[in-house]
Length: 375
Ligand SMILES: N[C@@H](CCC(=O)N[C@@H](CS)C(=O)NCC(=O)O)C(=O)O
Image (cartoon, rainbow, N blue to C red):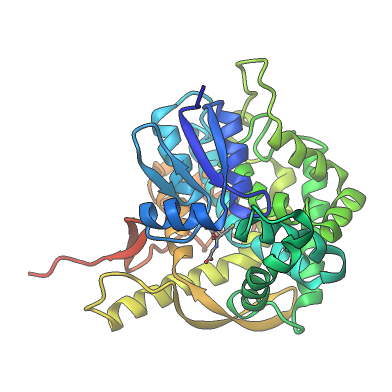
């Protein structure tokens, strides 16, 4: 019998891993439809206007793109086993962690996949070849996958700011992250307790298809952070026997063992986020006639572990960042005081104070500015 939902996805795709693990955890029945070029051309593009995966086809005929939109769609229909903690600080923490996973662990994911070609390329080319021409004999897949590999492998460096100046720094930062996450997992099965939150699913994107499954980083993870590898496996195979999915941390307190991860988030990632909010605002003011915000809105420099280089500013980051910012600004005074104490402990005490001057929203899968009404 067909299941109510269909997830258009691929094992090799980063954000597919996030959506797949989430849908399994929620126990909403779904079939996975392999995102071949034919599926992209015949279903994804006409239904979403984009050539991006994953896409969720819902029982009511909608096509939802973007993993965060997929999660929010499914949460609204199936509130049981919510991935959003109901208490305010944990909720804020989960949104920050989702943002960090989606947008910042992307750097090591792309770096390790494309830099360690000798180890990874065999697998990647065959999987890309399957996307382009699933009907071809497997032996020809690597050849068919070359153009797609050239596209992704050729563009990520400039867009994300990954090059010879910061490769070693990205590896130092990621290895430190792995050690911190591994130590955290010695105390808690998931990021915020014994139950996965939206932050875990954000982490699952980069930590599955690329950093667990690609041979070179996969070996690094299994060797240096075996608990992280176990977590990836747990996230992909949630226990289905009991209805009680576990608990979020007690007393609405983000676990202390996450402090180093939050500290890295606020030192490395948040300056990029803050700069992005300012750049989106400038871009929108400079383009009053444009209904949609361009995917890239300029270039800026950023620093990871002492290495500075430039990257393209991605407007989408603002849409993700508005989520924790909104959660912070909606806190009741007592909760805000508690949040500020926690944020000060992890170096984020100023980070969330100001809101973006221009807000953005997604309309038909495009980012649009919410302009102040004139008159
Ligand atoms: N933020 C989106 C990103 C989706 C995305 O970037 N998907 C990748 C594959 S993992 C893709 O389709 N990229 C095509 C492109 O960037 O043109 C999400 O959460 O779904």
